[in-house]
Length: 91
Image 1 (cartoon, helix red, strand yellow):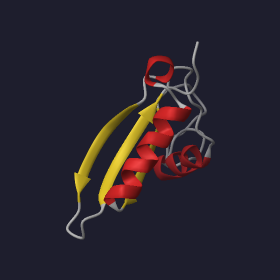
Image 2 (cartoon, one colour):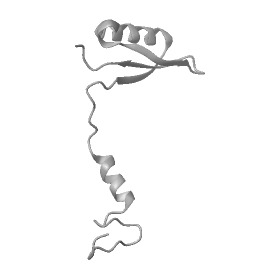
Image 3 (cartoon, helix red, strand yellow):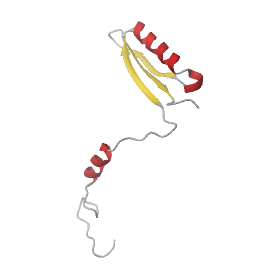
Image 4 (cartoon, helix red, strand yellow):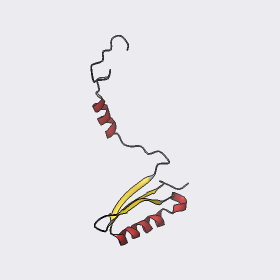
């Protein structure tokens, strides 16, 4: 450590605690990398879930966007919860 700088217990030399730094970083807008997946989760009745999946595959064809149902399950009330993922754009 350089002369003239004192470290207070729990604070960095700049006077920020780890929780203050984490809070500030958590408020920053998130930046997506160019290859980041786009995901959306739905919880719908079975027929509507099927229609929503068809809508996504029509709008974002698998060959261009690598669209896929990443996860799905049937809930106790009979609804289907599922996550669809795709690439943000086609090349």
